[in-house]
Image (cartoon, rainbow, N blue to C red):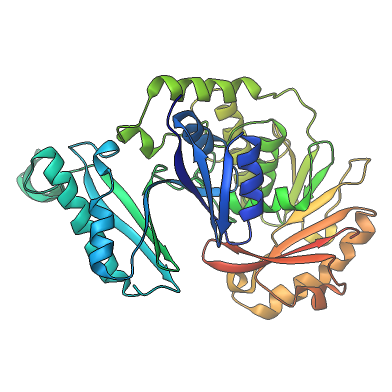
Length: 413
């Protein structure tokens, strides 16, 4: 039986329940969750499943050690005692990218960073009989052209192990990033428009809203179409990581045969023939064109084709119907009631809070054009309900990247 490891899925604070449910659907055992992190057990196939299949997670990390440390000596001993050589090959560098401490004796994050790097490097150098780990080196090389010869600085590319350290109540968790690029980089978005909603956050609010593919979905502030495109992906049973690679391929635990089998299993589940009732609108024509282009790129990835770059014409795509309309004129031709899930312009994005507040007030008119529909809204404004004119049935805090936000849900718009 293959060894199982402890892994951690990083996500937006407020999306832990969504990620936990996703892991369970992938038949992976959830250990616990805390402030944007969900710990779970997985073998190699399970790690690939999490990397490719999680919609709401931003990264998947492998926990290489977990121990108690009340001082820097204990931190050094615990780090140097971890089996780094099981994961990190001889030709890789190492970088401690982030340190977070909470309610612990060790509080100096830069010192923690230095100690962990020194201890891990010492272990790897000892195992591989090296004096130092590989690192990025800036060299000067000649560059020739038809007119003259110039020199330029060139950084030699060395693959690097990215390490994150979390210390909670004196318990140290050393984590190695298996994702590489963040998991919200699906491959379908070449242009996001102004201040786009992160893909993983869009997936989180869709799943939190309770929307299912049997219901119509509309977004009257579609922007670059992130919510709608994530909905189409979900409706097609398409794993979000199918169109990209991951950092796990650089480590000793990588297994191309297992990766291909997991990828093929996910690809077999895609069903592009399903009737999908997804639509949206925006007052900016260019945003609508970008949304249409992103939807078509998603279709390319679903069909196993290279995603074509560039902006395509707006209108009905393979996945959704898009219109250039201001929110006050938004309407939907679907017969059944459904869900409005939207990310209205933030005050920070508009540059003026009062402009956002006027939009929230105008949103109360959506009920006349979408009678009986449910409404789910993500915004950075904690006073949304007072401007909209109706108290939400539920509200939760959720982060959109670095922006603390609020997710309001109305059972009846």
